[in-house]
Length: 120
Image 1 (spheres, helix red, strand yellow):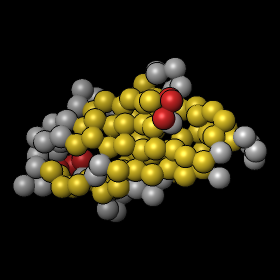
Image 2 (cartoon, rainbow, N blue to C red):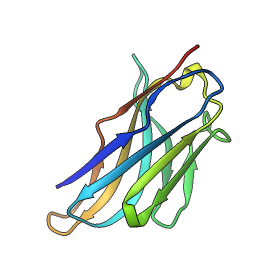
Image 3 (tube, rainbow, N blue to C red):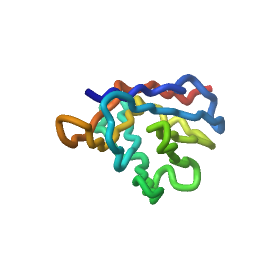
Image 4 (cartoon, helix red, strand yellow):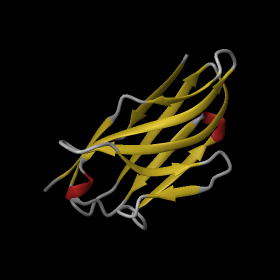
C-alpha cells in the first residue's frame, strides 16, 4: 500500500508565498510522474503542475511564472513553491503520484489534500 501525505497549507495574504510538500511512503519500487491539483469550492478539480521522474515539468497557464514544482526522488517527495499568491488560488490542493509497487502493480495514488487560503 502507498500513502501520500501533504503538508504546508495555510492562510496567507495576497502576494505571499507558501511551500507545499507531499511525501509518498509504503511499498514503492519506483515513482513516475508526480503532480499537484486543486479544487476550489463549487469547481472541478484542476491541474496545477506535474513533474516527470526525469524532471520535466508542466504548468497550468494560471500559475506559470508564480508556482514551481520540484521533487526529491530519493525521498519520494514532491514540492510546490507558490509565490505571488492571489485570492483565486484559494483551494484544497491535492498531490498525486504514479507509483510502481513491489507487489500489486502500478497505480495512481492521491493524497488527502491540504487547504490553501489566500485572503487579507
